[in-house]
Length: 260
Image 1 (cartoon, rainbow, N blue to C red):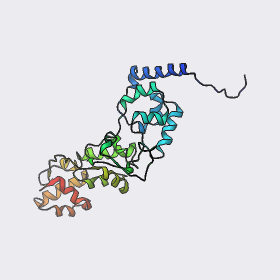
Image 2: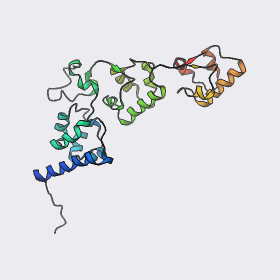
Image 3: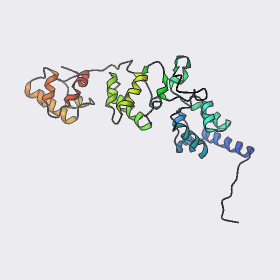
Image 4: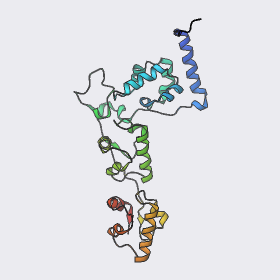
């Protein structure tokens, strides 16, 4: 037998049997349990566990490099060329952004696409009703050009630390979120439902209570309490600017969470 590579292909019957095994594995293997996910952001590892071939995953990644999105199971199959049986097994778990489900409320820019690409628009090419920044999911945020898995998770984590955004401008404070990308987000998502915030009484709260505020570090909280004890009370928010290491540039933001 020569050392050269031997090319081979599967006939339709064998491929169908393999696809059935893949589908069965997805249903029976507890470790392979599926949860809702956006198929536009399938990694190589995720693709392998779903039963996709290397070629199918590569087609998806090449498609996404063009900043295009598949917005339905049919479009996903057209892009990847996965079999009908595999699509049937995994498509019930597909979760697309909400705006893709409301075509009647979406206005398309006439000069940015052709009939063949209408369903594969980037986030910047779609104008839709503004949705709530406090309820958007990490996967929905990934529909915005410039936001991937890590950045979307960071936005949601920061929102959770705040117990919800109070104003749109807080989005700009997310670590490593470029202001241009933040502006793209705010074209589609804004603070529509503000969380109920129990304001911290700066004249009564403990160090631990004050340091729970995202903007104030524990050491600064200790300085605030020490200042209060020396002076009897804090009479204005401007006094906080005199405290060592207090983030004076964030005073307007911090005032949203404090009371005297």
